[in-house]
Length: 203
Image 1: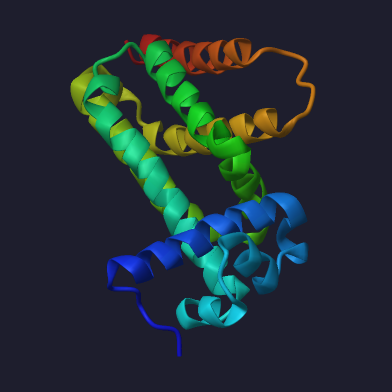
Image 2: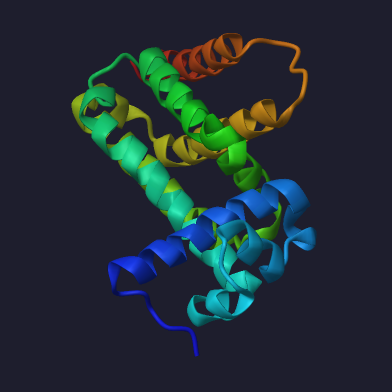
């Protein structure tokens, strides 16, 4: 039965295996990735890998938790500043932050997220959705006029998920037809125009 790492050396080994999982996924894809590939990249034996993870699926699960923690670590410190921004600036700051996170370490997080959109259980994205919905809630608290938008929860859900997957798709394209700055500006304008139009309707 796999053990939970408690000592610093054991934690370092488990973390190395998780990072090797990202590398293996980048090189071999989900189907091609094996525990042998992961162990070789981590510099440990397959037996050592099984001390911490029962199978490849458990490594993928740990990779997901690592990815969520990275997103949380990015968004939470930004939140006090983001909630005070004009909405276009908020979207720009947030999406550029996502881009930088996904592209670091030779883009291994980007390749993981691109695969996870298809192989991960639907509820795996819930922590990130909750994080961004909480950001939206705090934004409304700082901009109380937005509370007049009766369909805000639904529109927030659509905008968050649509924005995240649009960025993922854009960054995964080898030769995008527009620049990232243009993409971000377009998304910011779309959201701002919607909000401004709805507020005018509400009077």
